[in-house]
Amino acid sequence: MNTPDTPGPPSYRRRRVPAAQNPLRRRSDRFERCFHRFVVLFLLVGLPLAAFAAGRTAYESTMRTVHAQTEQRHEATARLTSGVPGDAEAVRQPAQVRWTEPDGTTRTGSTLVRPGTAEGTTVRIWVDRSGTVVGPPVTAGTAWSNGFFVGSMAAVGLALGLYAVRGGVGLYLDRRRYAQWDAEWNQVEPRWSARFGR
Image 1 (cartoon, rainbow, N blue to C red):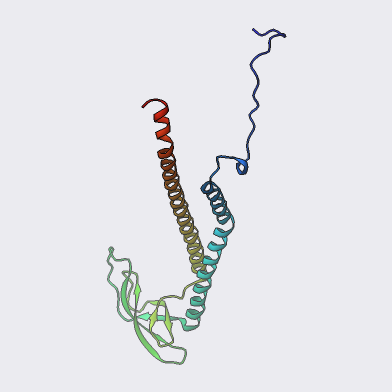
Image 2: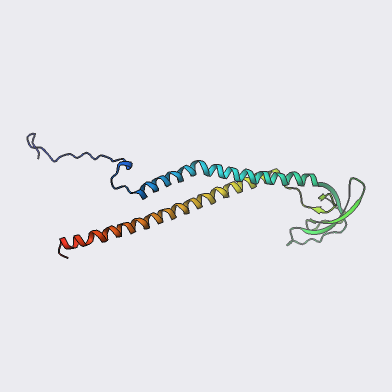
């Protein structure tokens, strides 16, 4: 037990040395610290911007397709010229249809209908300018989903690529450090062996 006259063990205050003033800090450590800052900055700023740009590009490209298909296609009412047998296994089956264009021209074509649809049933079809039965035009909702998907995939791809680059840089720096430590140890080890009689 300590009395007021006998001092106790000295109290050491642990002082934190800033990384920039650390005497053991190597050039590779400074480079690695700057590279990590760049990675964080890119993740916070560059990655969202790149994902937004990729998503916007995909959205605008799909919207151009939407406008082009909307101008080139129109919906028409057609009648089945042949019945479709009811087959529970098939979701839709091809059937022959006939319709009349706005200019009075009668056309025929093939479209997919549900099994069990009787002859003479009216169906809605999409037709292009040449009179060929086509699918419905792409919608704006598809453009939004394409933009979101492409933007998300761009973000994931860039993040994975950046993670791989960060791992590669770390591996390269570690190998250099190990090589430097080996070279320094090869210089120091003979003196230590001589000192301790090995």
